[in-house]
Each structure stands twice: as C-alpha cells, then as structure tokens.
Length: 195
Image (cartoon, rainbow, N blue to C red):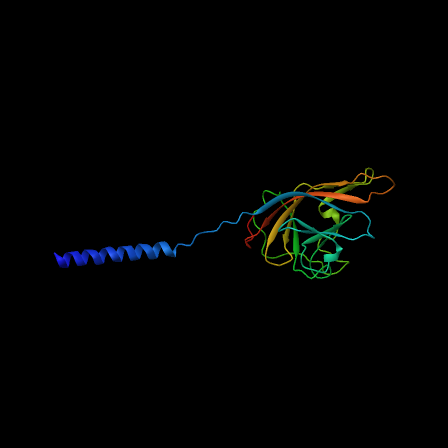
C-alpha cells in the first residue's frame, strides 16, 4: 500500500508539474487596438507661410518650430503635402496613394513607398493625384477611392488616411488665410502592417 501511495503521489506531482508548465508557457496575448480618428486640420493658404505638421500616433499638431525634428509624419500648406523624409525632414516617412476604398485597405505594403527626395520631387507631387480643383468655385474635392498609406517618421509604424473634405475658413478679401482639411485615418500602434 505504501508503494502504491508513493507511486500515486509521484504521478499526481508529475501531472501538476506538467499542467503548470503548460499553463506557464502560454503567453497572454496583448491586443493593441488601432487608433481610428476623424479630424480637422487648419493649414495656411499662403505659400509664404509655414506648413502645419501632423503626427498620427496621437493626433498632435506641430508648428514650424518642430519642422527639423522627426516628431511629425506629414505637413500641409495650401494644396501641398510633404512627408517627413529626405528633403522635407529627418524622419523615415514614406507614402503610397492606392486606388482603393478606405475600407478595402486592410494591410500596408512592405515596400513601394515614395519619399520627398527633393523640394521639386515630393512624394505627393501634385494634389491632382487625390483631388479635383474647380476653377469657378476655387474648391478642392477629394477623389473617391483614393487612400493614402503612410510609413510613419519613425519608420516603424503604419497609417492609412482618406481625405473627406477640403474647405476655406470664412474670410473677407480676395484670398482666405486658412484651409481646413478634414480626413480620417487609422494608425496601427503595435508595429504590424495590418489595419
């Protein structure tokens, strides 16, 4: 009986040890939810004024004081969009404009990003790649089915963005002082390229 009890006790300890080992080996999966946001960004109309800079990770807006840092991902002035790379900043930001609806873009490409290689060769070289301009009403209208995919300035995260509306701030005189860009975006904070 003593031998049987010892054997049974040993078997139970082995089972507990194996069970504990299996449980301890299972890592708790931390689910990081993508940041999904719709925002308005007010930018300068005059090309003699500075760009307004934006960061996807926390929707922070930066002024020209931070233009030489990698804090921001892209900047806008009038109808010009720059990204934080090469000629426009010290970051590693890149961008692709896909002919796809916002909902259909579920993964950021691993390669193929454009960069601001020089002031004359910007990644987003012309607003006509994502909007139309009406010369009678002086209005910009985003083209449906155009989705921006960004690699952020830190080179380690991805975001997708869709322009929803472009309007002028109320003004008196021949030209407005500001343009308001309304856009939505999804930023993936966990470092993967899935949205």
